[in-house]
Amino acid sequence: MPAQSKISRRMSQSAVVQTIATYGPISRASAAKLTGLSKQTISEIVGNLEADGWVRTVGQTEGHVGRRAVVYEIAPDAAAVASVDLGGTKVRVALCDLKGCVLAERVEPTEQSGGVNVVEQISRMVLATAAEMECGDLKFAVVGVPGVPDMVTGAIRMAPNISGIDQIDLANELNARLGVEILVENDVNLAALGEHWMDNRSDKDDLVYISVGTGIGAGIVVDGNVMRGATGAAGEIGFLPFGGNPLEAESLEIGALERVSATDAIVGQYQSLSGKKLSVPGIFDAAIAGDEDAEKTLDNVALQIARASAAIIAVLDPSLIVMGGSIGAREELLQRISKYVAKCYPRAVSIQPSRLGTHAALAGGVSIALSHLHMSLFAEGQKGAEIRVPPPEFEAFKAGVS
Image (cartoon, rainbow, N blue to C red; front, side, top):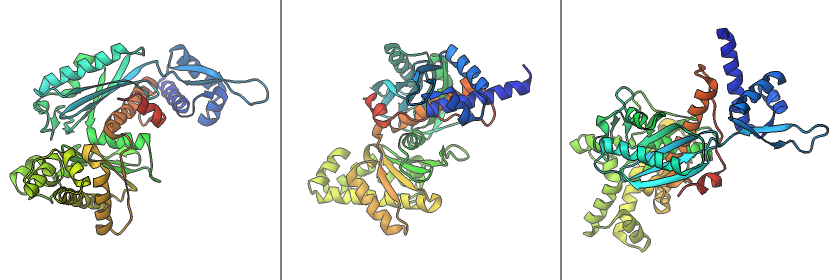
């Protein structure tokens, strides 16, 4: 087949797959209208996709005069993708079908010895989860990590909570064990993409996701795409030069802002004020009960996060900020952050809690995995091609997760 004909076929096929994924169940006639391709071309492409098991018939059109047309949709069980959220304390693995619905999820404490043992843990969890489900073969996996993937070495930088992960090529190690293509991405970037994919609450195609938990970071989505920066470290707001002294050695290690806004900072501030040591949930409970030291601790932390939020707003002008993470999404903190942002920035900005909670990064991983899989299968390396897979219904996604 001449090169130009191959390119044309790839373009047509990717257009048809995008149309079926977005508007399915859909008839061939409707697909022809939406793509501008001839009915003959549509019939040929859909026939090939159906023969290969990638699309399926799901009935016929109703309510039309004359012959009823067969309608098609992407076959959800034709293949599976995995989304992995690797954290300092937990590993979550979700197996999803081609419509993005979670088929099964597995959660374990993170292997504390780190390094290659974490690789072994992730591989075992993915394979065990896949073995339990009746679905197509695993074709692609996305792994969210609490650090910055080095695009040259594959090591994960800025991930102090998982030892040895900066000494291995994580993607290659996982590929050797799972036998599928692996994409590694910052977990907060994935969370931002997940929130954007599952629930676009803004009137523009952008948002900033701020995660506060063991650490603090931001995922930035502009025009529907995550902003990574020159080295992949865009959004590492823990290193904003305020809060703690940015010139001290500890700030160079974990970041000046993170020193005053994440888990250890909250526990330490409360202890210095009250002389008592409580967990972060305990401090929130104490604040709800009227403990003045707990309330002051949350006020101080909220003020620092609000300053960071105002800096982000001043630079990026997002339409929405989503607060997430085990700490960031707490209503008691969110109210304080919103109050302080309103005092230090002149424009009203929507600040809302994450709807996906601990599964935001998993959702982002699913969105990337499905897009990459569809591209590799149906666009076949075509330059400039893009296939965006619509999200499942929110409740359908949540129903499959723990």
